Amino acid sequence: SQTIHQWPATLVQPVGSPLSLECTVEGTSNPNLYWYRQAAGRGLQLLFYSVGIGQISSEVPQNLSASRPQDRQFILSSKKLLLSDSGFYLCAWSVLAVTDTQYFGPGTRLTVL
Amino acid sequence: SQQGEEDPQALSIQEGENATMNCSYKTSINNLQWYRQNSGRGLVHLILIRSNEREKHSGRLRVTLDTSKKSSSLLITASRAADTASYFCATDEGSQGNLIFGKGTKLSVKP
Image (cartoon, rainbow over all chains, first blue to last red; front, side, top):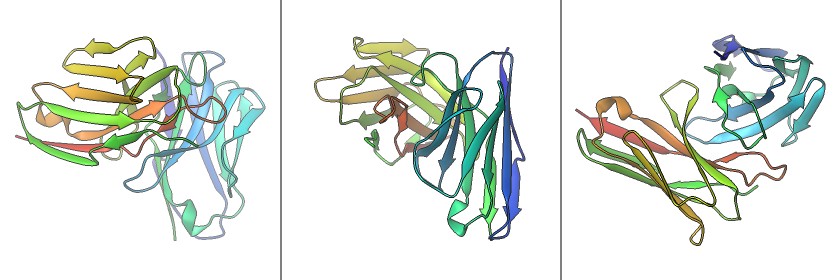
């Protein structure tokens, strides 16, 4: 069966520090991968998605970047965090089209102080 | 980007009652999905309904889709305290064909 992992689960970082969040998927090949951010009490904002290794699409301009160095690994990064980067970050995957059913990881709670 | 909008934003009911949540969207879609999120957790897919379907059932869940009104509803029958969660609809209205999620309905089921 397929599983998706995210780490760390929680993170507290000072403003201006770098960020690296990792997401890995097991049990499937060539998944579509997604990074979302959820502000408190809000819906999900799509940040990046990837349909293959090295292929990254950005939905909105921001202080973050994403990379997909391996088929089932998706990394969210920042060189310098801003206060506004605080939120709940969710990784997800899907099999077929990007509008197919998505399967979410447990999320990372990021607090920037 | 267009976005599904759930209504109401919050709903509080007693165990055993039915809960109905609505979602409206703005452009034509190929499918609409409903997800559930327990507090502080990831989202879990509940059901997908395609644009050529009008109603779909899964256990205690019933989803309807009215493409003429650009709206969908999620009905949870005989609710349980364990149904307490936020419920989101998602449509394939994204500018790059991606899913767009609404802000969700927060459901509280009291025992």
